[in-house]
Image (cartoon, rainbow over all chains, first blue to last red; front, side, top):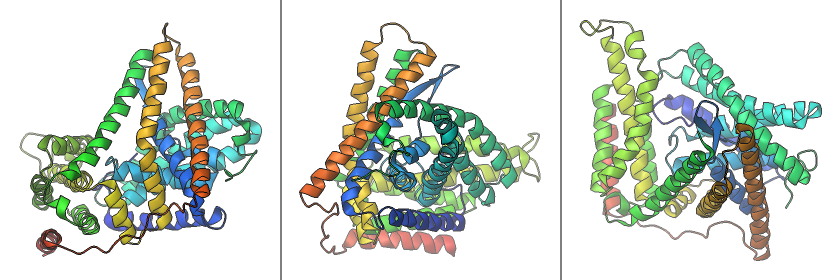
Length: 212
Length: 263
């Protein structure tokens, strides 16, 4: 879902980047008023862990494999605000070190993967958790990534550089990610099940945010 | 796909990422044009060139900008294999994505083919535009050490906490790559019989869960250690940079490109 440069019109990329900066600033302020510098090591190290975890291949029936994205899981593990900052760091490292995604569209990629996916995933988890945490984690991963894809579809569909109409991009990316997102949902659920058994103290209802 | 093949694929992915990571640390040490440009000037210039490219809708213009990115790579002594290797993936994917437009767009067709001239022009322009943007980003990444890029972001007044986060994450990448590789190799060595799909998923869930919990615990240890040492997590104040001939030359290249394209 990393959009490279050249797909999205410059004004749209800049507007979404401004929105990303505003949301992440707000997230930083919601975490203890301001993120204290002493918290940067925790977030930075966890971001490196999430990045590495994305490289593990998961088998898919039919002979292919998929990988973990982890936006919704980061929100469940760290809380939505720290989760958004963590995934934003991962997305920025992917662009600035490995060239995944573009430079001018970095703000748009952060918006789709670190804001929409994380906050939507977390909201779904919180709403569904009373009916079963495992199922809630599955839905969070599944619908979180689908929401991120729909946000990307809106940006692409509104761009004159990308000739497909908005309804087409929404239909293709929405339906595609509703199917692909099942894999992300299943991975999120399996990883969550381990977390709930091994470190129940890290579950959101045990501690809303990671404490220093 | 067998469990062993799956482990091998993960190890290959980790190795590829680590190889690029080390290459991106090594190439900026070569003497070359962009290596001599001050990182903040280079970052601003490359962002300007990418922004300029994104706004273009004419094939000759985006082709000229793609050539400019190749020329910058050649002047910076970026190995052709590395540069072209970076340049193949995203444009090829872009071609797959927009190729149907060659038939969907209206207008006069190209001879007996069911493709419109406007559609083919759009597809080519789109693909070359993506290639030019990837080219500019690639020359930035392979001619600038990440620490210099972070310094440039600080100088350009990016939020200090964002720069700190990027720096810390970068520092731990190789460590986590190695840890993941060890984890996968250990699982592979323990795999005697081919596990079922359900078993593989359960084991992978346990592996990733334990890996992430260990990451979190390591993060907490690093955070406590930094606090105990009185570390603020911020990079020290950077010395002033004086601009040189290479900065002036690169500035002229960017200004000329903007002037020619906009005029």
